[in-house]
Length: 241
Image (cartoon, rainbow, N blue to C red; front, side, top):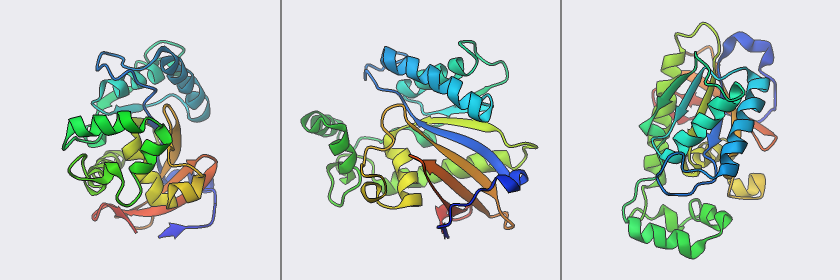
């Protein structure tokens, strides 16, 4: 169910399961050597940690992809959230559900990335019909990525069911995962935001996970680029309805 009205759920504070900062990793060196993000990206991630802490409180849980660039970004966000010192109570978790796309043909994929070059065009090729990066002979299919993304979402919701208060959860993942969630909530990225490359390196979306009267349904509310929308997530089917 798409919720077209932009309403505040603040009056139902007790129904919020979690406040989530869903972030793309910072600009990458692609060396697989920690932290595998540029110095500027590291500084920006530290600044992000300060900003989101001021807005939502210190992160309680930071979940990151197994990719080195995601771990480097997550650590910088954690450090920035407490002015450069690791918060003693933060839980750091690695999740394979939010890993980057798996390669069917790594050499061909890398050739395409290099030949295209432009980040906006690379992003577009992940979403258009017949795009270079929707070819299962090159990369993992969007359907496969969507399935594991929402499997991970259900795992997170299940862990939150036992929480007495709504934690601040930071998730650091990759364009091809985050953009699927944004597309499923808002529809076509270009029509909704005027670009496909959203989020770009280091950008994030703000997410609220909200209880409903049906324990099998959780409302997912997203603020992306100052636009807000929400849909209901069927936990058993692991898809939006």
